[in-house]
Length: 333
Image (cartoon, rainbow, N blue to C red):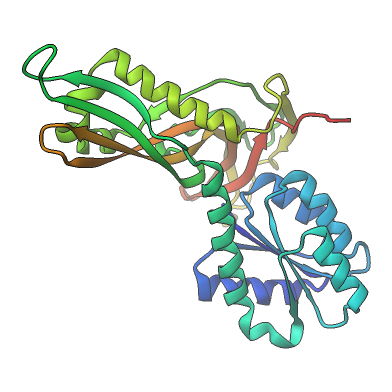
């Protein structure tokens, strides 16, 4: 998925800037030249930083940013222009633009993107603070009343990936063969799913899982604590739903033996998770030492990733990502 967006009415300029940023930062960068494509990109991808050309014929950078903010209020936006007036720059800062970059200073564009990409992550991390450590499990050893006490705390949460898809979770929801046309409606529904990543659970066996994770009550407390943290960060209405209807059609099979055409297309989707690293502290009154134990968990994020896989006549295949579908934000009107 893309995390940086470049919007310029000159498609060639947008592509060049995107290539420069991608090479120098390693981020996946999407370039577009039309406002509607920019809006769709922010809806479908976890865009963290958007570079917006101010002087565009259809819609100015500030006008476009107003619309992008409605989709992702946390988005970091940078005005990129060589002709903006003081009034336009002032308006951009008032609207919440993070920075301003003149086209004559393109050499520093990757540095600016890296700065605000990092700031986005810092801001997101602040939303996931646990606050006061919460006791998840407590026990006494040796004697019932006088033995050493061991407590387990949830001390911190770090967002590793806001849009994580398990590699093996893709499923085919529709198959279209050459010459066919079919409609499919994507829809999302609300559910709470909590997954402890297998590898991390295994690594934690010696220090945490052996003492806590096997206990049903303690495991339930861990899940409840994480769910409460996740709910704090959610702003969508739990009763909202979203659906998108797509029509897919493949051309007829070619009679030319030399032509390589798509024989079959598989429409696929997979749940999207927030990938979190939980930090637990094991505190023992005997040794007077605290042991920190990391555990990676996945929490369903009320969205689905979509893609289609094309299978060609020559036996090759191609995977094309088609973005995410998500429940709409609540109507506050």
